Length: 411
Image (cartoon, rainbow, N blue to C red):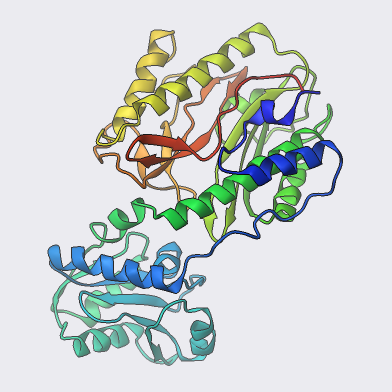
């Protein structure tokens, strides 16, 4: 049996994780390791709103409308499910924001609201967009450019357009998207904690994988460990043998076999912030072709990390990986065998969020941006290899949340 820290790599900022790993080896029960996680504060959310208002004014946007979802959590700390009834946040270019919600939901909205904000309600027979328009009129906004957050549904933006015929409905991306791409130190700390939980859950799970197990059984062990460690499981994708050749898997029955590939792509949240980590290994001795491809994919991840320089366009990271892969016979481009998807995606409150490490992406890399690094190699009909670790940009360059898997050791 190999040492757990050798298989998966440890987070350099997580001494508690090493203690947990030692406990696993001794059979000690898992315990919550998130007790020191610090939630996002009310003050930070209010500061986010204040910072959003400056680019609103600079871009001539009189107000921004945000629907239930992660942007509502980001600015208002308010977790809310979407339905046919509008609950949303309106941020004017100056002054305090307002939450718009059904009258019968007001007590729950006040309970969940994480900032000081006016709460405006509408009755079941009333038009909620008229309530939005009335609030904005009080703030002196009867027309002009109204920014719509990118995930807002059509009926919401169209309803506002009809309620404010003098307004121009525009994208709020120059405000919301740009702001959310740059993570604060407190956001990065929560993503680090989520990664620590995920790595610890991997260590627990890998010790328990046996020949004959199915993908669902392995995923269940991983999710149970994640919960016990204090995380909220988001996904536990387990791809076995040939299924690993298809990035999001296959519906065909899968079982762990001696010498077969086990590819796991798992993540959780801590205080809403995401982790995303993939590991590929084998029970028994890997065949020479598999060992060779694993090392090539690991080098691809190293190439991507080296290309992630402050000021470089995000697409340059993907370009560097594809140049390397093509130089050793893969591709070209997205052709298989090779890398059939982007090198990485943004991550934060959402598992996938702007911007991406993909060809043609001109957004300059900047401190605070967070990405996955996962340039997998896929050989249809055979197997696939994906090692994924997320990193965040600093002034000095990228820094990993989790250390990449160093070797494909037998378990």
